[in-house]
Length: 249
Image 1 (tube, one colour):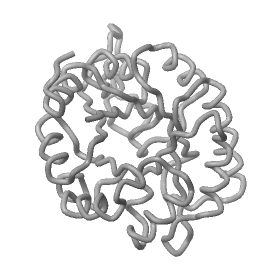
Image 2 (cartoon, helix red, strand yellow):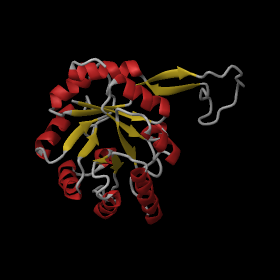
Image 3 (cartoon, one colour):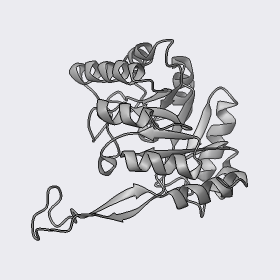
């Protein structure tokens, strides 16, 4: 059983490795659903040993319909991730009618090349028109797995759909549940679906070390607490690993 932890900071990558996760999906701006991390973040994350590194390729938040300039951006980001030593990349794009954008995705897979053949199709899948047609198309692109909540608000709610997706995929690629995953439900999701990989952020709030704190000024959403951030928790990662494998770090 494989646990992948979604991380948007070096602290989170360290926590995922320390807790015994098998793999990291590295991104930035988890509040936006994740976007491509910076070159510096990828390079620093690559220095952390004992854990595989997959890099999210997504130029912005919002929908998964991209114009030519955005696709060019993603191709360059894939090249950067591969050069930095990423073990895999995480991609996805949809057409206006809700189907997989085959042309764009083929270009992204091609950009990864032979140096990086571990490719995940991300949760754009959950917004597609026909998941079974999408599986066939994603298989044809050469992807290794699909990250999905089972077309639901979270993976537990989508467990029945996830099971059907696993049966339909029939070993052609891996179906990896994600969305609302924690130590309390990871084992139940795997048991209910027949999946062998699972994905979660497994975060907890961390207080800032800043002593001086100016009140009433927010850098992002008005009223946001600039002196607290969400970081992957070594304890939550370790508990989830233990619950799905029976092994303690």
